[in-house]
Image (cartoon, rainbow, N blue to C red; front, side, top):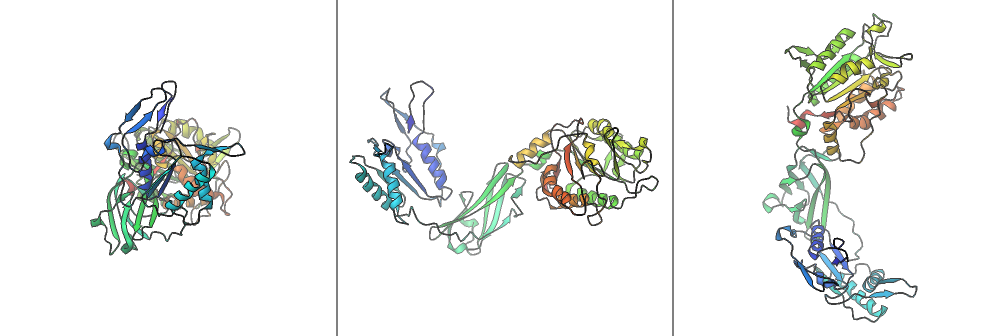
Length: 527
C-alpha cells in the first residue's frame, strides 16, 4: 500500500511486510484476526504469505520500486498463535470498484457487499460462508468483473459465533507472590513459578507470549517455571495464556509494577528520624498531654524496623547524638536541629516528627511549637525559625516535617498544597521526585485545634499514620501516596475529631517540587 505526492517529502508507504508484522503480533497474543483490504490490487499485498518485496506503482514515474526488509526485523509466529483470515477486495491486477446508491452516497463495492453479508449471516457463520455471501451480494448490487480473494488458516472457523462464557484460567502464582493490587518487584528480569489447576487439558502454556518449555511444565501436577521474564521499569502486565486440547484459550493477566534497581534509584544516602514527644507541660500553663509518648514510641519503632530509619547521627567530630527527644526544652530541640544542619549530607533524608502543643499568634500570624519550658514567648519555636534557621540550611535533599499539634497547618507559612498524583506512571514519578529537593509538611490539622487521643492510646492522626505505614504494599512510595491513600480520609472522617490534616510544601525553605519518598527495608535487601 502506498501514497504518492507531487511534492518530494510529502509521500509515504506502508509496506505489506509491516502490515503482516502487525497481524503476526496480534496473533501472537492468542487473538484470531480478520483483515479486510478494500483497495485496488489488494491481493498483491499477500499478507498471509508474509511477502518480502513490495512493488510500488507511481503514476508519475511509471516504474516499480522494490523495498526489501531486513531479515532480522521479521516477527516470527509463536506456538499457540491465533488464526488469520484475509479478505482482499480485488485480485493483484484488478481495480476495486465503487457503488453509488440512489441517495447519492458512494461506498466501496466490496465493503458494501461485505456489510450486507454480515447483517444477514446466521450466527456461527464461517469464513467460507461469509466469503460466498459477499461474492453473491456483489453480483446483486451491480454487474462487475471485480473478483475478491479470500485466504484463511481455517476457512471453517466461525466469524460470527456467539460469545462463549470463559471458564477462567485456574492459576496459582507462587513467585513472585501476589499481593493486593499489582505485583511489585525490584528487578526487571525475574523468574515466574506457579501451578495450573487443570494441567491435563492444556496443549500449550505461554507467559508473555513465550511458550513454557516442556521440561519446565509438569502436566501431572500443573507446576511450571518460566525463567528470565523481562519487563521494562514501570507498569506492566504478566500474561499467562493456556491453549487447551479443544483449541480454545484461557488467559489471566496480572498487573506488575517493576520498580527498577531500587539500590540505584534510592542511592547511598541514609534515612534519619528526629522524634519529639512533649507531654509534661506541668511547669507551664499548658495542659499535660496523654498520647505523644505512645505515638512517638510506636512510630519510631515502625520507621526503624520496617523502613530502616536511624534515630541517632554522628556529627563531623564523630560524636553520636540521640534523635529521640522526650519532653524536650527549646534549647535541646534547637541544639539537635543545629547538629542535623551540620551532619546531614545531600543524599540523606530526614523525617521530623513533633507531637506536643502548638499555638497560633494572630498578631504576628505565625504558628509556634511549644517546648515543655515554653511558658514565655522567647521559649517558643516559630515557623519562621524552623524554616529559615534549620530546614532551609540542611544539606539533606529530602526533609519531611510531621507535626501533630494544634495549628500545625500554619507551619507551612502559606506553602502550596501537595496534590494527589494522577495518571503518571508511579515508578517514573518517584524517580522524578527523588531528583528534586523537597521540604514538606504533613500536619494533623489545618490552622485549628486537634485532638489528643481518639486512636487507641494514640492521637487520631498518629493512629492513621501508623496504620498507613503498616498497610502500604509498595516498597517505594511518596508521602502523598500515604496521605491521600490512608491518612486524610481516616482523620477527617473520624467522629472523635474535628480536624483536617494537610500536606503542603514549606514556603521559602528551598523546596523544588520534589516529594519525600519512603523506602521499605525489605526492598533494599536488608535484614
